[in-house]
Image (cartoon, rainbow over all chains, first blue to last red; front, side, top):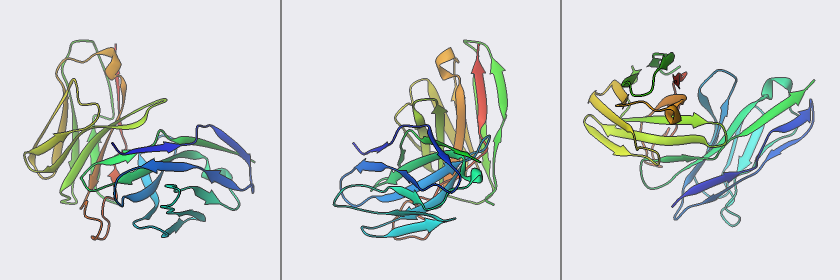
Length: 111
Length: 118
């Protein structure tokens, strides 16, 4: 079945450092791909999405490119802030109604 | 923000007791989902609904049942709670799963319900 694998955390960085959180997927066909973010004490919220190969999703300085050849959707940001500290989830949806999440990566940004 | 509320937000109960969590939406979205979040497991789908009285199982449905008698309400029931069901439960809604539709498969989450089974 479909699955999502993302890098284990926690990831700890200093403010203004570059961020990459790896995400790879296994799916038949052409899934849509998502990154969600969960701030402390809150539910998840959509950060960005891409619905077809080579699409780039972007929001709040974060970017991710849908790479079908490597089945990847890595999350990147050029300069992180303390306020980016959160848990990040990669997810996919395929031809049915279900949305599959990775296990999440906790990010700590130090001032 | 989408109108989605979960109740109760916190509950402590004893093993063997029944528990019902409620998810209420004001967006008239067709799809509703129940997930549980546990350390080391991320988010796992319990059950979902694609319309009134139309539900299906997710990957961790054992020990849970759901009902959807109205578009706006999706209930999750633990018939006899066990300690392994201690978790944070999230409800989510989406408008459509068709990739061609705007907002397809974009989930809006509730704030979560923390359940502790002693």
